[in-house]
Amino acid sequence: MTTLPGEAWVMPTYARFPVTLVGGDGVRVRDDEGRAYLDLVGGLGALSLGHAHPRWVDAVSRAAAGIGLTSNLFATPPQAALAGRLAGLLPVDDPRVFFCNSGAEANEAAIKLFRRRGLARGRPTIVVLEGSFHGRTSAALAATGQPAKRAPFEPLVDWFRFVPPNDEAALAGAFDAGDAGAVLVEPVLGEGGVIPLDAGYLRAARRLCDEHDALLGVDEVQSGIGRCGTWLAVEDAGVRPDVVAIAKALGGGLPIGALVARADVSFAPGEHASTFGGGPVPSAAALAVLDVVEEEGLLARIAEAGAVLASEIRRLAPAGTVAEVRGRGFLCGVRVAPGIEPQAVALAMLRRGVLASTAGADAVRFTPPFVATAADLDEGVKVLAEALEEVAP
Ligand code: PLP
Image (cartoon, rainbow, N blue to C red; front, side, top):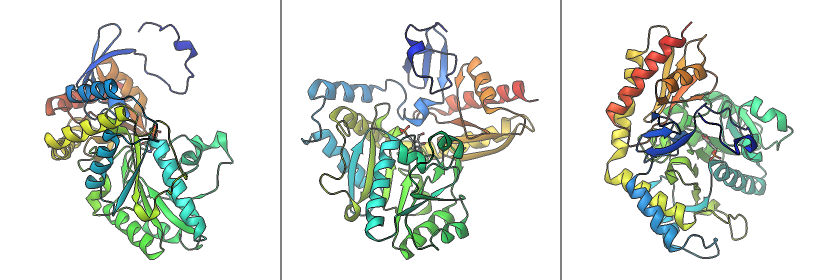
């Protein structure tokens, strides 16, 4: 790895891997020394079509050469088309779409919706989960159930009540004080360690929200837009949320997020805004992503290949190195046995030419591009097994 001029001035918010990436094609990337890697990080789940997918490149190039940005004072065909597509694909009744630029922003918008409605009804508290991750902006961070991430910034807004995930009684109890007007959950807790919520729990959340006239919001920034083998992970439970936050995979590498909400709880003119949100270029990129996912039948393939990935990891991991394989589709978390550092596993994989990330305190995470083949995933599993063998105590 060469030392890049200027790198010293980048704020060190991330503990970076010791590799500089300069090019990519499909699920492969290469570094500045010409070494190739299989990319199972995929831009932390954002690179749905992989690197430089021809359909995506073409859509982005055409949009950029057409009209790059109009602000949201003017309508554009790509944004309108994308809103229409999302309204047709996502399980929200009479939906309206607000476009923004990231997952945190989509959640900030959701939180503002919850607060406005909750304040009007005298129930402004939002119930969220311990171990959750909703982003790094102030309110999204306040909603994040990871105390260490919040600690340096406290006191944050006290709008949230935390309950443990997959505990129906605790969720029911969160309404006892009579001040809760919304619930916000990740159907698969991603950054928290890839922990799926049970279908029964999600259905109970829907029922409790209905009983208490509360809104059910799902943060599908990481799990949504196909990553779990359905457009939203919550679909598995047959649940229709009132509010959905999406981002990551939607743009296939360009920054776009969206809040999709029932029309009767949507923002009124002037209540929320974004200069760049849903600009023609990222909207065209997102349309290309949705087109390719549909035309190539990727949802079914992700569900199937993801199940094979999980079972192959269970089969090939050296005895005693893996405690649990969790997740769904192409959101896969490998909880390693005590004494094994997930970051050491990721580094050992990197040395063998495969990129992986970590999630929570004890999991190695795979978020492959949707175009990864069975052979790509097999290669990842083989290298994971070798890395586990190397770092196991
Ligand atoms: N919500 C979830 C579930 C996420 O996984 C993330 C990012 O990992 C975010 C929100 C924040 O998204 P962004 O980094 O685009 O702000």
